Length: 334
Image (tube, rainbow, N blue to C red; front, top):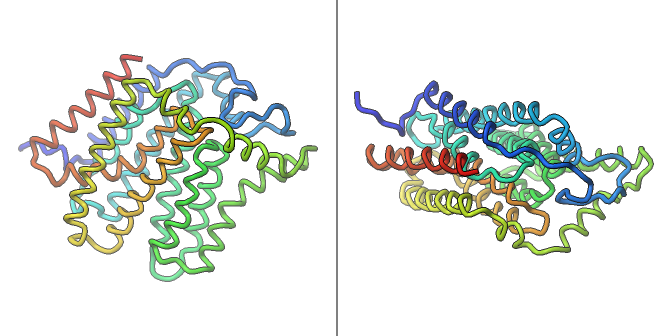
């Protein structure tokens, strides 16, 4: 039986993800001390309660071992979410679990810095939002799915404020999946619920209701949008360029073969491409950090298999082994 890595079944895919995740957590740098001033949105003691980003940062600094275990579980969980998404909607017209190990490989190549817990928490919330937005593309109303997706999107902006440009996913899903005005209102309510809840709790604890918005606007309006890009280590920059080139090649194959798939798989794949475009302002904003590169693992793990299942068996095996070997090499160079 000839090996075809593009038709990878569940068990080998899951084992590869588990192995690369364990290695990533083992080689992850030790967390640094957490203060209100070194967060992506500094609070300077103006909030009556700690922000979600600060809570995650404090937990990781106080419990580094538990933080790595939780981050590892989130990586496994997110890989399974993306793998199930690709299988459920038959995105490649071929049964493959390739998105599962590719997510772990991309995380290993892109994850930088010492705040892995907050980054992977936000990445998991992004994958949950993508899954539920995809579920909202259905006959009839999809209130439940679009509300859940937007709720996860709102939580993600609390865990990683630099992900604020990703709220454009809501508009993209409403337009691309032909949702009604009522569903759009429900989606906006779902996104605002966690944000306004945090403001309300801060106000109830003695702070000002609008302080979180004021701090966020000050952080986004000051600073250079290129700081994160200039700080990317060379090895992670090489991984980023390689992943983007694979995404571009997959896009070329998709444009040439898009009408061979059904309406739903095609719309969901276009949604992933739109998410990839939205990640550009997510990385290029004044509050972003190099760790935000990890967000790219979500759409790329869904897009790249489209390329691998359509090229010859030997080239896709070589590409897969290069990606796997490159991510391992990056981990050992840390």
